[in-house]
Each structure stands twice: as structure tokens, then as C-alpha cells.
Length: 466
Image (cartoon, rainbow, N blue to C red; front, side):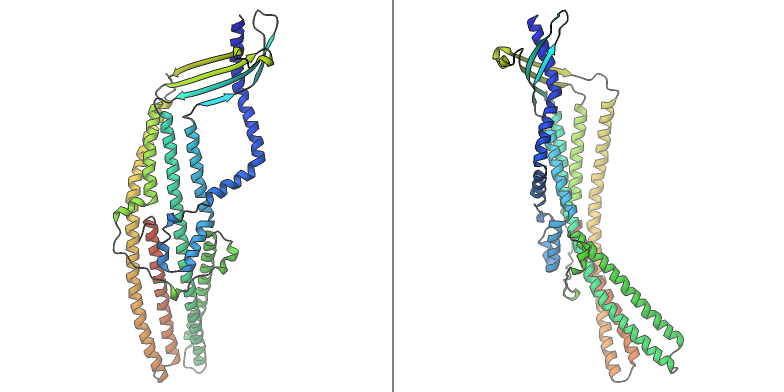
């Protein structure tokens, strides 16, 4: 009767310890968190966000533009862009999730303190006990189900690192394209101001000629309309440049209030890219979306394997050792130790079809992810080809319009000579100058389009463009 009483007390104590133990641990954790919360948080952000991954963006490639300001903005974006910081922290998030899953492969150990008072049936008196149980539990992973779950979680971590790289490439490309558009806007605004001045002079000359009956009122109205339209176009260009400056400021992690202080290279000093003849198909294998899709297929295959192993029995091991005594002073005597070691194998005979549905679901998801992988491969090839075609066609367009502009410039030089010789009027010279300025605007846009296309090809190849 004495040993039955002691065993019953210890078993009850172990259950009490299981209930009370987490509460005691939480209280301790909360106390520690209250003390070091801000310090740990600061260290976490500093330790991970400060690791800038310049290797992700192939920083040497950006030197081909020979633009110091552009390189500085790329560096600032890598160091300060908040989207990149989020992407880096997300990698850490998945790393910790993988560690949490890994913990399920290991045994758990708990200790507790459980003073107990009890009364057994048929006994009039009550008795008490001081118990200090130590409980060890472990799910024997002989079918490697938990190991596969950890592998699946690790795939999520690997995928997050690839997505982080994709974020770096996207931000760097956005900075480059935005910067190029600002350079173009600067030059277009400069040319547009010359066009406005030319149209103003044309309007004033026509107004004077109208007064002496040499020009119709309708021609004066059309000249005035062209002058006003040119002013409106200038406003649109300035608005577009302001918007681009604000976007660049946000990309590099600065306030848009300082956007107008951002420096850039003059268009006339800008670099024109060299068009590659072809791109190797092997470069597709290095694109982040392709690699991420490949990892997703591997993870989905692991998830299907885990779903199959859910049909197998669970084997649990449990160990209990408890110090127990009716007197606290003798609680830790070896003679008062109670030990228990047990094992169980549990197999669900009926789960309402949940496991079958889960297996079919995982297989379905695997098929979807596999088709997405194939589709990603095709789209990657398409994007590279489209980017290369755009670059080549815009380069041809630029060279053609540049040739037309050079011819128009020569013709304008001849017109200037004719004006100086009195063969044409100043009004005719202004109109031909405006044509030259309009052609120059087209050449400027075409040249910048080539640079932006080159950046698009850089992005399409996963920053592996040489």
C-alpha cells in the first residue's frame, strides 16, 4: 500500500510538473526579455542588415557606364533600401524556422517542482509529498519523417536567400533605370527650353510681320499655339523629372525632400553601351526565379514524402525520474527516487480521410509547382531574348536617327550660311533650327533607351551579364 501510494503520488506529480513547468519557464523568459529586449533587438538588426551583399548585383558590371554618381547611388541603395533590409531579415526568419523544426528531431527535457497533498480511498487521513520530477520525452524518428520536415524547412530558407538576391538585382536595376531616365529628362528639358525660345522668336517675328500685312492672322495664331504647347511640354518634362528624382531618393533610402540635391552626370558625358551579339542559354540557370522554382520543386517532393509517412505509426519514448518524500529535508535522498521508462507506438485507425486528402493535396501542389518550374524556364528564355532584341532594335533606331540628325545638322549649317548671305530669312532659319532640336530630342531618347535596355538585359540574365 505504501509503494502504491508513492507511485500514484509521483505520477500525479509528473502531470502537475508538466502543467506548471512551462509557466515557470515563461515567467523567467519574460523577465529576461524585459531586461534585454531593446539590446537584443538592436544587435539582431545590426548583425544581419549590416551584411551587404554586393556580390549579388555583380558590382563590376555597373562600372561599364563609367559613372561615379550612378555607382554611388547603387551603393547607397544596397546599404539603405528598406525593401532589401526586409528581404535580408526574411532570410533570418526562415533560418530560425528551420531551427525550430530541427528542434522537433531532438528530445525534450523538463524539470519541475510539485508539492502535493492527497487522500486515497479507504483512508481517513491525508498525506503530502514534496516532488521534483524530471521528464524526458522523444519521438523516435525511425521513418525520418521529422528529418524530412527539417529538409523542407531548409528548402524554404534556401529559397529565401535566392529571393533576397532577386531583390538586390531588382533594386539595383530600378536605381539604374531611374537614374538614366533622370539624365534623359535633364537633356530633354534643356532642349525643350531652346525650342521654347525658338518658338517665342517665331511668334514675335510673325506678329511683327502681321502688323505690316506680310503674315496672316491665322499663321500668328498657329505660331502662338505652338509656343504655348512647347511651354506645356516643358512642364510635363519637369514634372516627370521631379517624380523620377523622388523615386530615386526612396530607392537609395533618402527623403524625397532632398531629391533635388541628387547629382547626376550630364547626358553629353554619358556612356553608350555595347550591344552583345548573343547570350548563352546556360545563363538562364543562374536566374533567381529559375533557381527558386527549382528549389520549390524539391521542397514539394519532400512534402509529398512527409504526407506519405503520416500513415506510419508514431513511436514515442518517455522517461521520468522524480525525487519525492513527505519531508523536504529527505526529498533528494537516492532511496526516495522513482524512475519510469516507457515506449508507445500509436497508429491512427481512422482520421476521417484527413491523411488521404492531405496526401492528394501535396501531390496536387507538387504538380502545380512542377508546371510553374517549366513555365519559369520558358519565360526566362523569353525575357532574355526579348531584352536582347529590344536592345538591338533600339540600337539600330538610335544609329539611324543619329545619322538623320547629323545630316540635318549639316543642312542647318548650310542654312546658316544662306542666312548670312541673305538668301533666306531669319524666320526660315529658326524653323529649321527647331527641326534640328526636335531630331536631337529623339536621338537623346534613343540613346538612353539603349542604356535602359542594357540594364533590362542585366536583370533578365540574373546580373550575370559580362
